[in-house]
Image 1 (cartoon, rainbow, N blue to C red):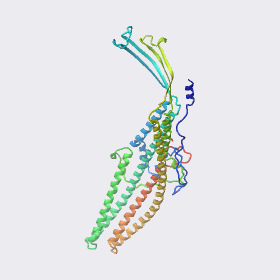
Image 2: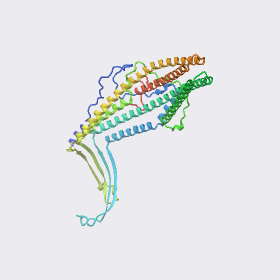
Image 3: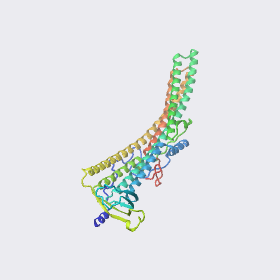
Length: 475
């Protein structure tokens, strides 16, 4: 008994290595485009703000809300969250004793030819037992506690996976909607071009019929009109596909969702100057990777605990009798109580292999964490760079579109007055259409770059000290 007490006293020893988050070397002190940087601490709460509201579009807001209720991909992620929480509760159950009760009420006939049967033994007899059992394994070497910690860390990683899935779906929906509204603007530009080209084609054909314009001019004007009509059809086809994609994201068949064409002005969400380094701490994929490193660390403790003896404390007691009458009485009482030990002495290196495997998983998880963190640096700098460059490009393209429109009008006026060749009109109209479409496309690309940056930062922005969470799951 003294040995048992000594083992109980050392309960609390953990065989898991001391945990330190994986170190990242050669970290930049600042983003290349803007803002200071300090190393991010994993598992810091993130932002639950509805970042897409910065675009200022009520219909987009409605679609984003529907994702949380109706998207099947997010629903599956939430089911994985529930399963992970159940795994934690299952692991914790091993911290408590197992208590059971049973009853065995049987009538039996003994074989006449049973070996070594006594002459005075009856042929028929009853065997009735009512008993209770209790078993408890003290967590001497931290196996159960490390198992619980491993399950809890994995559940936290699944929470972050769910947050990442939610953010990815939100970003995908916002991107599809922005592209759809961009195509609405392109369709407006092309519709205007078709009308203008149709007017120019009619003038050219009248001039050709009057012998003023050549057949070449008439062919050029007709080809230009047909090409603009083809471009318009292509834009409408792409818009239909985006509308279908949005329907799938909000969990309805394409036939159930119709988004009317509209010229909508979407605002680029503001990115604070001097971007705080804590934004990257909220990235759910980085937090999930760190939690899996911690889980792998605890798994080493579970594997190492197998080298030590297991102690079982238990007992059984109840009543036994050959007759139901008087079954629960003092003469029928039985009980047994006492500890038991078990220690594997030889397994052909199995336990050493399990520890080596756990350490390899730990190393792999650490390398994956570093990979995800470095990708976060790249994606944030990519987003900031894209916003900066597209801003310059958009301003230049807007100026180009303005000048091209002026040139288009001037060349057409000169052609109608007979002082310019139709080739000048064709060139000016083609240039004007290209620059106007390009200006719309760059505006759309800027909005898409803003969405990419939001996703790279793990969500929107909230004031310091706010109670933050991503995907509804506090970290």
